[in-house]
Length: 129
Image (cartoon, rainbow, N blue to C red; front, side, top):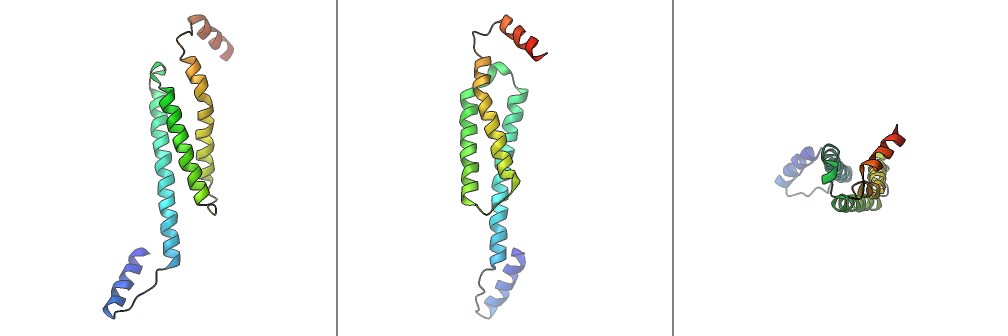
């Protein structure tokens, strides 16, 4: 659609005429940029999640993980705030997923505590079934 608009503008330039920007094309362009930003954030989160999930538990850096989660929650909250008319489920779902994970970070930090002994892990395994 933007290509067609550019083609028309080039034709009008021949006659030294200006065409005002198409509001619909501008709106679509803005929505596409928003979608791209949302999916870029989601991709970054998924890539990190996969890395944490497949990595060694003992090597998890909970401070870095928490910092990333907070940063991404701020970005998503900004997107929600700046685009109040946008009712896409992906924004809420992304925010909820990251927020839920963020709430588990203290548990991960506690489980990584050097004071955890084999008996503690045995008790956890027994409780988990």
